[in-house]
Length: 471
Ligand code: AMP
Image (cartoon, rainbow, N blue to C red):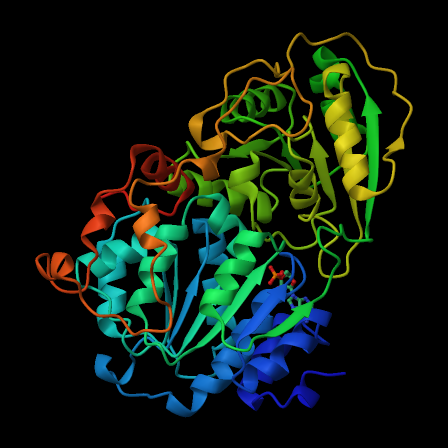
């Protein structure tokens, strides 16, 4: 089955060919026809399956008849809104949209927090048909009346499960209430919890359901291996593996920001070019780290789970779990960074005695054993490896699962509901937005509660890219 046979426009086919895609991925084959037929859709697909093109291509095709070469902003209203949980994912999605629409006169832009809002305002004022946004910054634009969502025809919620995990539900509800009731809605999620199903029931009308992988199924292209290693020899083993196997691009996972920084410094000291990505770094630093890693300047990127979520790094050959994640599903997300778009990948876990229970959970979730590799000869022992009792920052807290009593109890992010969440639950998604008296007082479109988020929620969202830092 080819892209041609999906009936895509010549302008899109040319752009796809420029990207080097020769045939559609399974999610694209399943998603493109129903989206073109204007159905709502609930899609279970992980990042790495080609899902972005699965929704972006048909959206661009549907908007193409309305494209305009006119410079007038009025001729370029926002017709498609794509919401993503993180800045990085937002930037990646918009990059894809821009690449696929390069032979059309449709415009796109991206808005996310943590960066100057003024260039975003300028881009919105000029007019764009496709807007990619994180929820917090979008609401800031709503509040400042620098965005008009009244002509949105298509809404995409990308990585909806992660948006809910990150506490964005009230923001999503506010945004949904600002959109025309007559619209097409697409919901993409790697997992389908009851909460996601409830959201889908509320926002989708007679949706087509598609799925390309078993829930939480790790891609079969990934080899899962592990070393049993003392915690204080992990650093040494990591440097040994990178050097002895001449690894050119490795994403290394740790649990905390502090560990990420420390490990990065150690690797650099060992002569391995390394960078780190986590939510304490500025947006500029995160983008730079990703760019350096993608273009090969840095062989290693050390990441926390949240910062790495949704990262698209083409053909990443290695993922190393320097520490196992507390939640087995995070292992699935981590290894989802490799074995992408048909390339094989290898996931290597460094497991110390403290982590046996996490390993059991992961093997249960995977329904297979990780292949045990014999420890190589290591010269000397470096003292350092992240300790599991170290304090985790608020943004990286995740509830430990099951019987992991050794792990300090952490407040789960999703437990930090804002005080007004209950009232937000009463939204009727089928109704078009009607300004409430409270929002009229601050200019009409903006929900007054945007500025009144509960402290925990604000902190989490701000760190993770959803909420705007005023600049
Ligand atoms: P996504 O799941 O949308 O993040 O896509 C994962 C990666 O697959 C991205 O690097 C895309 O550029 C790439 N990709 C998407 N569609 C195709 C295709 N049909 N053939 C080859 N690569 C693709």
